[in-house]
Image 1 (cartoon, rainbow, N blue to C red):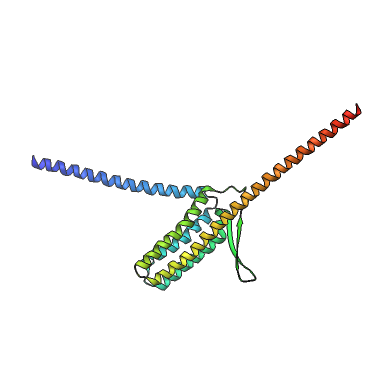
Image 2: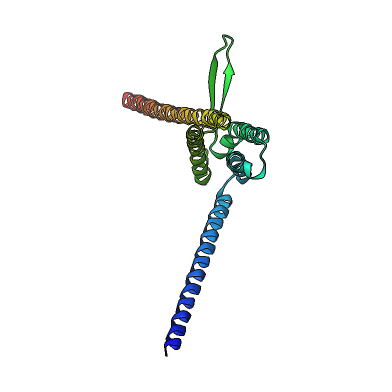
Length: 230
């Protein structure tokens, strides 16, 4: 009897373990499927999936090369060069392509004759309908990336890695420049849009007032003409 009871307990424990394992595997598969569906849904909703892909690829590539580069190579110089190149590609792409396509914004600096820098902002027409999926991705990644690099900078300081801190400093400068530039560009676009709407409203009010005044003048003149003839 004892052996039978022990056997029943073992069989129950085995069944519980198998069920837990199956539940865990099913949960992991479900999570991966949900993530894959979310990624697929985004790229299906995006108006510019290729631009969005490279917008993510260069940024993730720089971060992953910085974090995982030592797993594949002990050559710090190689990791340094690859990471800096990815950061440079990301800076140029975001500044000139990604922002223009994903949110309809673009910024650049012009050197003035006196040597000073002038910020120039370009924005799409206010009637342009933005893609909400592209906008959410762009702004979330634009603001999130500098935060990640700042955390990595703190890690370098705490672990006394000055050579790695150089990479992080370059990343903060480049990603921070794009973040600041697009923030100011977005404010400038909203200001232009508000000014344009106010101007159109004022012109519409003035036009309607002039039309009404002209109509009343014409009506009064016609009325006076016919009353005089009587």
